[in-house]
Length: 209
Image (cartoon, rainbow, N blue to C red; front, side, top):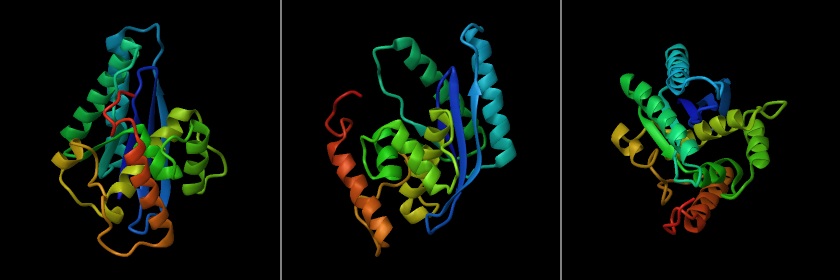
């Protein structure tokens, strides 16, 4: 499965592409950060991001797209810009009939580190380890985008291309609330961490992030 992960942002939009086997072995394909200057016209910045996202999708031809789910925040202007970039990414994916997965930060952290409250350094370190990289991808937006892609592939039932685009849009790849077959030791640890993070996450308690 080739997954394109997007950490949406108006000033820095992280994009990471990985190939993941059914055995959950992930390999880096491409990673970049699309940047737009804060002093430029808002619509021009959105056009730049849209153009680059579409070019990356056409060049690398992912099978799925993973996005961070946007939450309300005290900084309304930041949230608006992030939401607009998310919309551009969803539109680009929809134009290419690509299923879209939406994942919360807690889900992503649990998937790659085993701990839903991990910090950015821990996420970056584990992304480098999972992808067998000599250095942590920088800036953090790049590592976060790769983590999203890895999370989406791993949250699909043992890496299989299952579920419809409609299901993905309503919460990401099919959730593994109960294993349907024997897991390896590493998979069992990941599954337990994911379930613990879900139970403890603010999203599950109805609180705003």
